[in-house]
Structures are given as C-alpha cells and as structure tokens.
Length: 364
Ligand SMILES: [Zn+2]
Image (cartoon, protein in one colour):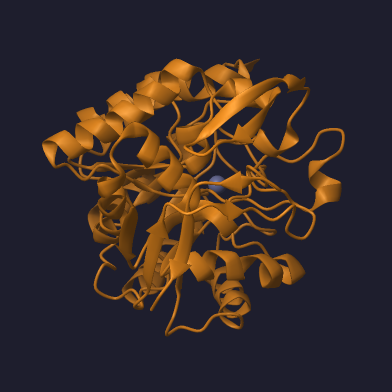
C-alpha cells in the first residue's frame, strides 16, 4: 500500500530558537513543503522588529526552494495596527495567535478572553487576517479549571460570543481534542478551520500512564509497563477515548461530505531533556521526524488512508492561500516497517526505539 503526498503542509509547528532551532527545524523541513511557526518564543513576537529578527534567524537554515517557513504574531493589546498593516501587505505573516494566559509554554503575556483585544480583532476581520486560537480556559472567575476540561469549557464560554461579535473573522481552532471543539468547527465551518495533531488522533489519556507498543498494524497499550509517560504530556492534554472517537468521526464526516474543515497541524514541540524530564516538566509532544508516519497510522486505523492527501496538502494551504506557492516536494508513504530512533537531541518521539508500520520517503 502506498500514498503520494504532494507538498504536505504543517499548519502548526514550533521552530524554536538558537541551537535548538538549528537542530530541530531540519526534521520539519524534511517532511513538509512548508510550515507555520508559532510566535510563543522569548520574547513573544508582538512587534514588527521581533518578527523580522525571528524571520532572519529561521531563514539562515532554510533552502527556500525546498521549504517555506511561515510566521505569526502573538495576540496582545500592545500590537501596533500600523505595523500589522505594513507586515500584512508585505506577506510577512499569516495569522495572529491567541494564547490563554498561563495556558502553555511561554504564554505569560497572553490574555484571558478577548475583551482587551477587540480593536485588533475588528482590524483582523476587516483585513482577512486569520485568528489562530489555542482554545483552553485555564481559569474562570479566578478559579482554576480542571486540566482535562479546559478545552470544552473554552468552547462553551468564549467562542460563541467571539463569532457573534466577529461573524466574518477567519479563525483556526488549533490542535482540537474534544467533541465540543469538533461540534463548534462544524457549526461555524464557513469561517472556521481546525487542526488536529497526530498524538490526539492516535492516543487517549491512558497513554499518559501506560506504555504504547507499536504493532504491525498500529499499536496497543502495554498495561504491564505503567508509570508516568512525560513524552505524552502536552497542552491540550490527551483526552478520553470518546473524544478521540469524536476527532476520528469528524474526519469520516469530512470524507463523506467532501468538506475541507479539518487539516494537518502537528504542534510538534521539542523540549530539551533537562526541561522535559524533571519536576514540573515542559508540555509538548515531539513528532516532527515521523509526523507523516504517525498520521498514516491513524488514518489507516480509521480506514480513510486515501483522505490523508486532502488533510495534509489541501485544507490548510488553501485556507492560507499558499497552495500554489509552496515549494515542490513529493512524499511517498509506504506501509513498510521502520525503526524509530531512540531519541533526537535527547527528546523521544512516540514509539521511540520501536518498529512502526509506515515509512515516509521524500522522492522529489
Ligand atoms: Zn503549539
């Protein structure tokens, strides 16, 4: 069995900075024709000068004939509209990302809700600038929300009001994990897209405590090997089996109705081992080296492997209007066993050191 992907695109990646950027970006550049880099670096990208500095830093490692890195601003009340206008006209960025304050890595400068940024949202709506949403409520009225319920609460409490006030704002629901987010995406599919990570399609929250064993067709949980699995801790957290089913059913719905609402965004998030494997370890799953293989495992399991091309190459590139400007890259996915490396710069991908059933090869 083999699948051909023409110009696969990752709509949610963490390129990182400094030495890590240099070491880690090649894995995303290898599998994808382009990727959208998130702005939660230090300091967060909230001004044109920050954006340009970061672009320069990233571009020194990029062969632009083979890979198109794309960039985002960090939603903050301090964003300068004149700067945004200039940067948008010059195609320097492709969206502005909302982080709930304290919700994830480097989100200390984020907002709680959209009240303080209404003037920016209305500017974005008028210009057609997409809002990228990390959809979680870490707290409501000063009360901490249960970590597993933050996404469901966010869609109940924040999003209906947002689309009511800004009915023409283009929105991407990033890394969705729950039935509530799926339902919201379907209900507002005229103005909304949603990305799904490989880990949220493959694993439910039992994987936080049980070892995942790759098998010839997919994987099983080895409950004899149980304990805390830090490599599976990310924000939003892995959810209940029923939520994984909702994501999978959303893809089946998309195939059945020929829709383009749900697309690929890995949220690949490398953390150095000393930051990941420690007390209060960092959240994030590192998937870049085998991202397409992981998606193939999920799509194969769902029985929609032929739809992977639409999900990976059409939905998000069309939304960001880059479908025809991505550099040419053809990837063949074959159902051939592959040994996954033990670690990459100290970080483990899912199924590290095991044999997985799919192999991606860049052929052109
Ligand atoms: Zn992310």
